[in-house]
Length: 250
Image (cartoon, rainbow, N blue to C red; front, side, top):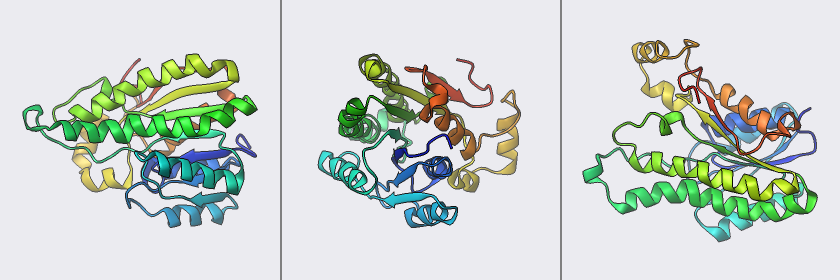
């Protein structure tokens, strides 16, 4: 298995793409820390699903903008399974869909904190032991929306764009420790939330704009994350991978 004896912390993994990544990593042998941030999803079901096929996991709720809670989450993971080998910064806060004139700085700050600050705190918490062991994988889940700006996504897009600078600077600094830092950037993904909002006609219209003529799945995102988490990508760092069927050609 590609992740045998590895420990993976996946933020925002109580639902959606995060839960999908947790399933795939567990099937590949990793012990998975399932993080619930603000009561979203069903982390106990994710854990039960993982255990049903013999995987190992642990549910740890934590507010990712709170340094004390982040460090407590990492300590719990270490006490249970050992040091974290793989960090996937996946959590995304609900988007405040307002025109720019109607936004407050607090709206922007919420997106910056739950994206950039959360990645900052989680990475600082796991990095020292990665350096000690001279092996680590730091992955963030982004969005192709940074290439295709649209109204009412101002703070979200700004925060996700900042993650590219964060990841690439970090990749340069920690490469000497055999730690890679990469970004998976999905397009529209058929999570349960998206399925509930998208009509069949809207999905067909969307797919006509995609060279591969289909909408992305949770598995598409999870498999790309698996590539970066495993030794298959051991000589790839600072990379940004759109997972969108060719909708964005980067």
